[in-house]
Image 1 (tube, helix red, strand yellow):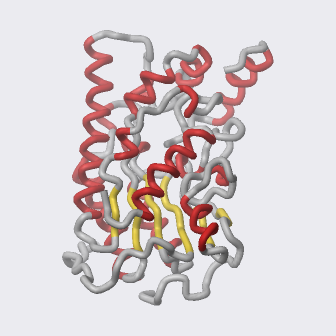
Image 2 (cartoon, one colour):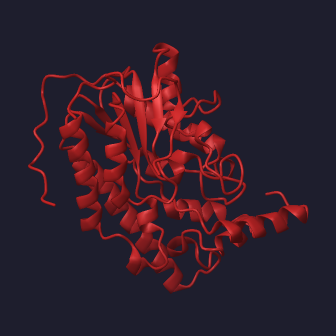
Image 3 (tube, one colour):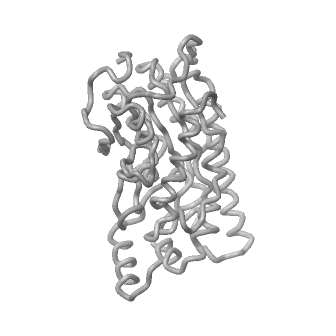
Length: 305
């Protein structure tokens, strides 16, 4: 998800806290990339032909390397301190035992597991193809993707990324990965239910003050309003997220070496204990652990959900 303006949030959070409130085609993992485990790095035309999945290569439940793509959720934004990424708690590549990330679980059985966190806070699905190119340079055995919240978190509902554009950008990224890294498998997470996050976070006074600074206004603006217009706006955002998730599943389903979570992240009932105490919207360490638990089942299960 896209962080709000840093200076404004810093002043607001600081004021509350001081006041005493708490609230190209090579085999994967072919030797290129960083040698250390759980290393996080921020990534500073015509359509491809229809994909042709290979029927011969089984899903590997112990891939030796992982590259994470996505947005602030995968970067652990606001999970450890305000206005900061905290990739150590990332559900995909984090190194903290309490989170037990996908890469962390792999390292328990494959000690040489390597990982790269190439997600970017504020990223849109339109940024995913560039992240995919960055991942290809490392030739990971598995790529994880959690993207799309920022496409719905816009100033107005009219400004949300259209479903057609979302499909085009996501399809372009997956086509590239499967063309350049045909042996690499892709794990795709659904987008969380933003309306659920609103319903939980709005119970916190500090959270609502932070939201006023511009965090996901399409969903969080005028958080306490129960007017027909406000409820319709929130439902419109939720419906768009559902449409995005449908696209994620459909596009992923075209490839044998891609697994979608079947909407499991969207369905997870985030509670106040799962949300950042800095913005009451992004997952905190516990929330990241829940994401890791959900998505590890998909990544390491005998069959997709």
